[in-house]
Image 1 (spheres, protein in one colour):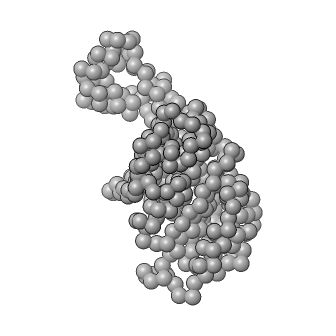
Image 2 (cartoon, protein in one colour):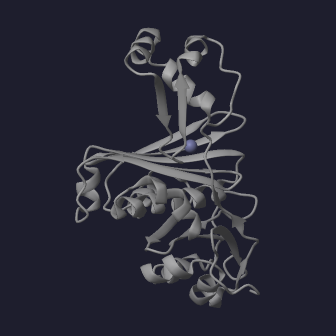
Image 3 (spheres, rainbow, N blue to C red):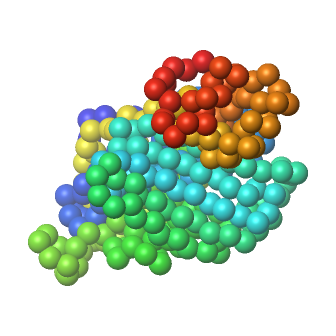
Amino acid sequence: MTDLVADQNAVRRYLCDDAPDARLITVRLGSTKDEMLDHQNMPDILKSLCEELVAACCMLSHMLKFDGEMIVQIKGSGPVTMIVAECSSEGRIRSTAQWHDLTEAASFRELLGTGYLAVTIDPKQGERYQGIVPLESDSIEGCINHYFKSSEQLDTKLWLSSREKSVGGLLIQRLPAEGGRALLEDSNWQTLATLADTITKKELSSEAGPLLIYKLFHELNPRGLDPWEIHFGCTCSRERSARAIRALGEKEVKQLFLERPSLKVDCHFCGQVYQYDHADLEWLLSDQPPGSDTLQ
Ligand SMILES: [Zn+2]
């Protein structure tokens, strides 16, 4: 272990010489999570939930190593009706939420009520996959671990912690013995899982990275691989927003333009505003996708 610092805005994978059947992943997001959420005017309690969901999404994306988009979404019946986090295979993240009448003191269950968590893998090539579990936990961490228990064939567990300055996460997974499905005999997996359980929320949010892995698992000789840099970015465009308007139907769109000189569409993820005026009406209603993708 040469690089003994906490990661900044990065995900990292580790191997342990003395636990070869274990895969470890950490994530730590600092300035990136602020860039992602600061413009969204969200209550702090909801920001924390978005941060933890995006941290989990980053680790899931890195664990599965596919080319495309990982999307984790929670839908609830409480004052928070939706939280979504995305991470692309290029390390681009974004997150947003929908809510009403929120009190800061509310618990996770009071905020979300009943609902479900959906994990979607949207590869650039091949079929989209979605796994869904009901919300039966008191935290984002609990919900994702419940998802692993219900759907993941491999023994997998994660820990998440969000504090003011940064959000951190740790994921451990037990892999089958090389070339097969059977588990490795004479494994140190249980030792590793017990050590992982000693992690504190403070350590996780502020130190997730090679130093923390070394502190926790040094007796198993962990080795960190290269970090995977994470950045905030949005995939919205003038063209995509136009498609959303078109989906309202011709009659509705014409009526909206009768009532106002222009239509504006805000992207909740990044705050970008797309404006359409009367001159755009014809192509907004045409079946042809708009040719221009210029931001305004
Ligand atoms: Zn956007």
